Length: 453
Image 1 (cartoon, one colour):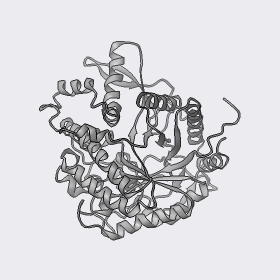
Image 2 (spheres, helix red, strand yellow):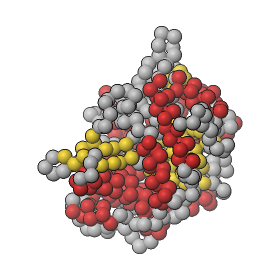
Image 3 (cartoon, helix red, strand yellow):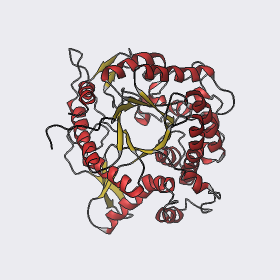
Image 4 (tube, one colour):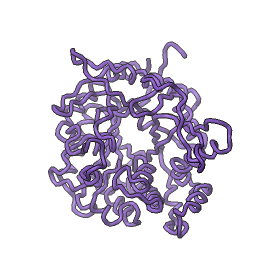
């Protein structure tokens, strides 16, 4: 490794958040109920019965949070819009107070010289639309396009970087397939339909964004792990194929004009998840889904090592390292920076996107303030340093990587884990809403300032 690593002059150093995880104000100023409001208020769904009712109170403290971003030196900030804050009924009447909040946030970011990257759907959809069938029904795509039109007409003059969906695979498989996330349904047949309508709505929304936001760049964010087989056995390799097809190729292949992967169509047919075949795919859908985009966002945290196990060969993820904090985050995810080079190379060379962003990457460590109020989270700093070396190696390999968004700016509500996991480079005291820059934030600030380390 070279002593000094320098990044391209225009490389965007950022941080990311999501509306439900930070905003709070869940029922204030005309906001409608979201699927995550309903899910977290359902007993037994979230660790410690935590909710995002208040979260980090960003709806109220957004100016302070922009001040923190400025202090760290962020060049860009990726955040999401709460659809039910904008359209409480999912469609129709616009809640002006919600629109004004995001307009002020964008103006505040631009005044601080921070480029806004807006995600339209980071999972918290209007509950009223879920009651009509949510992503399992085709009309949801039309509702998403209407919502996209409203927000891009309002912010499109100032926001020039748009992401349609964050991790549609998680919405489909964990929201509708396994029920671990909102809306909490457990039916793979519904998950497959949801996946299609998420992709369809993406393709339908892209031209709307382009119309309302001239010269904008538009993309989508997919989650991806670095998957490898524990051995060269057929069963282990098969486990990798099946998982990669479900979580990545089922989404990436259609986006890049290849249709749904045939091996997974066979898998789903055999497991009874396609009783009527692909009857939800209408003529022209696949062309719409493959509408060209300007970039792809990739969320990478860890690698998975698969070993087929048991009589039915259910794959197990096995662990190569001893479980020390250096090698494992508190989420139980392995710190494996080489996987970041792997996924960036794989996606670029397989799909040839024009540009890539790492739209999420980070580590959960709960290091608390010491007696001086300082937070020496050296394991997070180590995670970031090793992954930044990987970013640099990817750039050296000719991969058109344009920026990096650290997950996350703030400690926040971590979905089904509630407040038990802390990913932030800023510590949040949830009782007082006091914010403290962790050592990792101070280190990141120096990286951004020097554009390297």
